[in-house]
Amino acid sequence: MRTTSRLALLAVVPAGGAAACTNPSTPAGHEGYVFRTPLVLGKMSYQQTLVGPASTGMSWRLYVVNVDMRAKSYKEDFQLLTRDNLSVAFQVSTRIALRTGSVRKVVEEYGGPQWYERNVKEPLRTVIRREVMEVSAIDIQLETDKVRQRIYDQLVGKYQDTPVEILSVDIGSIEFPTAVTEAIQAKIAKQQEFERQEFVLAKTRKEAAIRVLEALKVAKQQRIISETLDPLYVQRKAVQVYRTLAGSTQNKTYLVLPNTADGTGMPLVHSEGKRKVLTSADEALLKQMEERYMAVAREATVPTEEPAAPAPTPAPGDGPPAPAPGDATAPAPAPAQP
Image 1 (cartoon, rainbow, N blue to C red):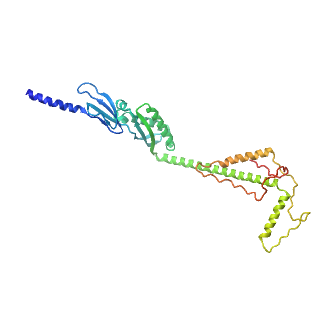
Image 2 (image 1 turned 45 degrees about the vertical axis):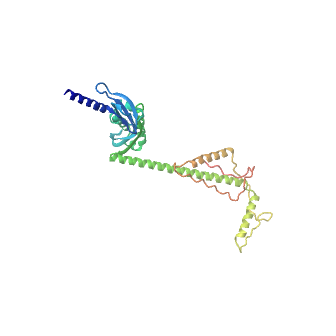
Image 3 (image 1 turned 135 degrees about the vertical axis):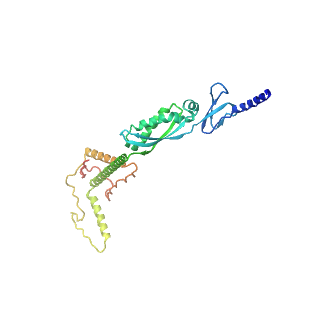
């Protein structure tokens, strides 16, 4: 009987030793918390970290807790009262990852693979709840990006010194009571109408400025013509007109009666009379008006609007190429009031 007991004990010892040998491994995208457990007495002790894919090889009583370190989206549903005491249902999707090399802290302080449910979920919901309750129901719809950014900033600040890394926050699936939905639609319609009126006003101001610029250009051209309007120039133009009439029709005769002392039929130019002479103050005022209305004409009506076509420049006709200098008696238009 003693021999049989000894043989049984010899058979159990190798079997137990084989069972105590392990080969812990960690898959890709995970980090492994490798620890050792004593055979009879003692405490579990941390040994090393495995960054997957990896394994320790055959070891004596080594085990591993694998934690997924990759980024994931965690969705939370809410139904809260906003600042104006209206019930709003929405969903917040938070994309979170664990920082590289933090698996030991995650296992020992944050609950291991259940780190989100045990240590992140409720604090995250508290931050979202607090931020959303500070805004009105309409603002959470019209200013979703601002609310989302505030939640993101709060979460980043809360977890910046922890293994948890907040990557992004998105708010969606917003549902309001019927009354709130109608109020939001009314506000959006009013805002669009206001923007349309602003567009019409800006376009009207721009068109008015272009018309003023056209008038200023015409005034400048008239001034150039009037300063060079002498009898010889008028006679030359008359000869050109008579020549055109003579060649434009057949079987017709044009008689030009003399109206001058030398017997020609040229138009008379009366140079007597008072003419407006622009002072330096008038010149400065006209220049100031042109600069002001040019700035208005160049303003973009809307960001996506195509550039307005430049104001057409009235053709000066066959007028003289340049003003005659020193003609102080040349007529000029009076400056327009701005």
